[in-house]
Image (cartoon, rainbow, N blue to C red; front, side, top):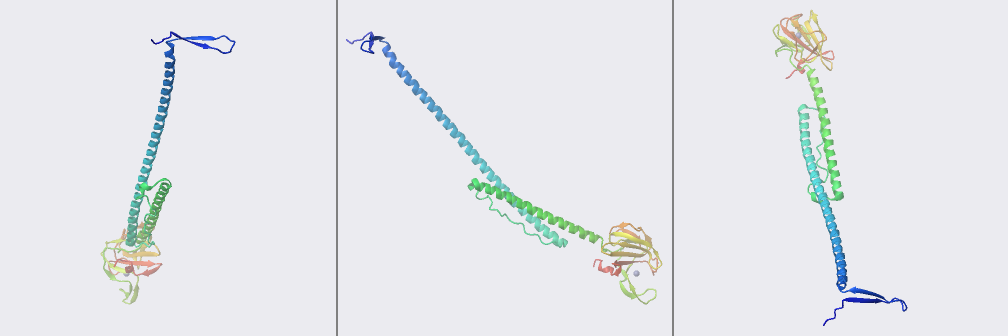
Length: 312
Ligand SMILES: [Zn+2]
């Protein structure tokens, strides 16, 4: 038979003469104590596991955030590199176009006989670029590549400005040439191309003695239009017993033209005329043997052979 006490009694003796203290613990309580200990230990373990789990999750979360941030940074760097490559390539394409423009500029200069010094060839890309090594660029190298791209663009900008300046100079020179051409007597003053008496010494039609003919006699019928041989200003019109009805025009660089023996004068002193403008009509007024235009060119007051100015 197993002994099963109903109660357990503990005696507590503190000192030799003091009374003995007695505790009685009922039997069911004997199971409660270990259960209490087990519960306490279990609670501690669970609490510990939970805390550890939370810390682990926090570490994993932070690691994931860091990984995402690193990935975003990598993607951004890749994107920047691609952008730099694109910009550098565009700069190269612009250089090629600039070189085409420069060749065109040379052609324009050659065709228009403009005396501007030849323009330097467009420089090719001076930087090492970022093209082939795009995925090797990191850190400082990336910053350097960005700076090179920036310089490359500045270079393109400067070269474009150079071409623009040179073209502006060419334009100004062409305009000056055009103005000069407009104000130089290079067209025939009437429709006819027949010279009945040339510039220089000849036998005078009235006296038959040698005399100097200071212009061209150009055949024509009375009433045929007479045109200004160049743009300029009417400095004189009138009638003279020798010249008949006449017009004097002033052009540029000491050049003047004179039209004589006219049947009509269509301009007035002070008028501005354009090259080819109708200014009078062919006639036979003054000292003239028949209907024709006497046409003179004066250079700094001296007669010059008009044919040197006319197209061959
Ligand atoms: Zn004459």
